Length: 180
Image 1 (cartoon, rainbow, N blue to C red):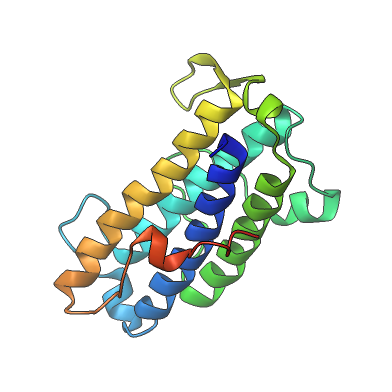
Image 2 (cartoon, one colour; image 1 turned 180 degrees about the vertical axis):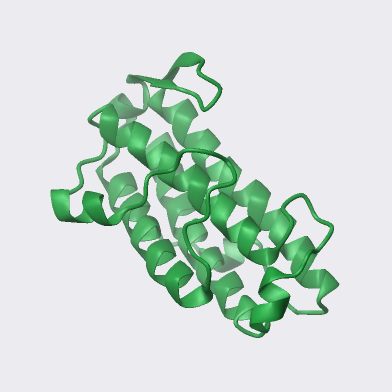
């Protein structure tokens, strides 16, 4: 499998898992969404906001490198990620709308990827001020790994609430032939 095909699967998996976990979180009360959990991020909403932080900052880097093209209106509607503790949504309604938009952008982006593009270098500055240059393929691998890592933390928290978040297996979530 080539990298663009792999990233299309990851983008679809990302979208579906975010929706699946969002539906599970809708079973929580507002108080539960904001109560301390003792996890890496203090609350369920903090987990979701950090996922958005990573996605938004990496999306901005892709736009700045001319890899992702977003119309001005959509770009203006996206919050700017500045620090790892940024909050972009205080409730699930806000979160669902923003999450759906960002997930759609990543899906569309992966459909435009080519093997040649994955070898293209991109340059960006980390939140710590370090300037990095990485191949687009390695950057995308980090993007999707970051999402999966933190959703794993979120499922741990949801387990503490006694919620069933369902299957998280990629081949079940994105079956063969369901990659578009």
